[in-house]
Image (cartoon, rainbow, N blue to C red):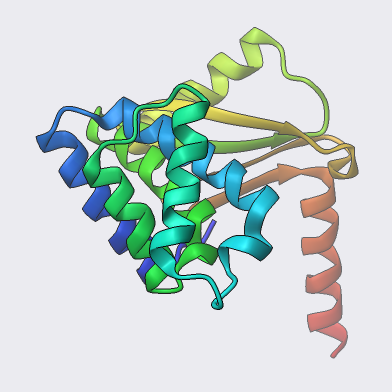
Length: 181
């Protein structure tokens, strides 16, 4: 996933504050819930006719009613996203926050898409590959996509490794078109 510079700045600012206040896990959960609230209430939250502080207050009240602790820092963060019209980046901010947490622990997030569910042995082999390539322990985010026909596609550290039949067929087609064109 490509992140916007805006999303990364907001995520890093919140992450740095969360580390200082020892609330990283709490803010991670708050971001996850805030993203879900935005999915359901985006029309209301983006309504410029309602004052930003009122929209932020509604979000914080909902989060409190769901049993989450919303301190002054996080409520200010919500307000800033609303007031600066940055709500559309909330999913990217949450994802970038999660990835930053992993990387800070010496782990590397890996998006793994496979044609079928992988066995434990296959996962172990892919984890070994990532460890050799990056020197860090992988944390897989897995998805199944039958359109791949067979094989896997891995994305990590800004790289994409396509070891799928679909990817090979597409590469073959591009090479044939290049030769004939």
